[in-house]
Amino acid sequence: MDTNSLGNLKRRVGQYKEVLGNTKSYRQVWKDSLKTQIIDLLEKMSEETGLGAKVEVKSDLENLEAIVLSLGDTKSGMYQQVSDDIQRHMIKNNGALVYQQLFNGKVMVVINYPFIEGYGQPAPPKTVAIYRPEELKTPFFVRHMEEFVSEMTNWEDFDDDEPNKRLGFELNFNPPKLDEQD
Image: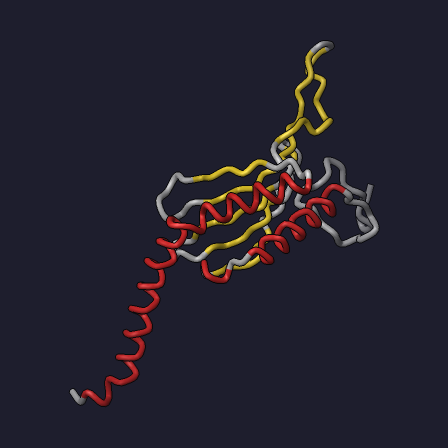
């Protein structure tokens, strides 16, 4: 086989090996500094703004860790009256901003919307972006927090001003359709 005919294949193999090396490098940066940097920045922004969020690390799987800025769980204010003196409260998850380490060492930033347990289905998470570790600088974290708080505010302030706005839950009553017969 002529080695000149393998030039394209050799370039592809070189690129493949480079990507594999990047994965190892990105994972090491996460362990050495990025994980701590993300935790510190999120905690500082939450404290300085009065957001009151809690930072948690999910580390069930090595190299697939997640850092979660959570607004926690609360009573939704809705409940089912089970009997005269017993109420079953519906719990509300208030949403989260997640920095998820991907299989290749890159970091995916995701917004998890609030949802009320037992009240429809949660909205799918919103992917903000995927970054190489060296791309994540302080201004990005501020923008992520701004987008997160904006999305949480929009969810909480839901009304019919935007008729096509969907929040990931369906009400337990639906308006009748025009073509339905009684």
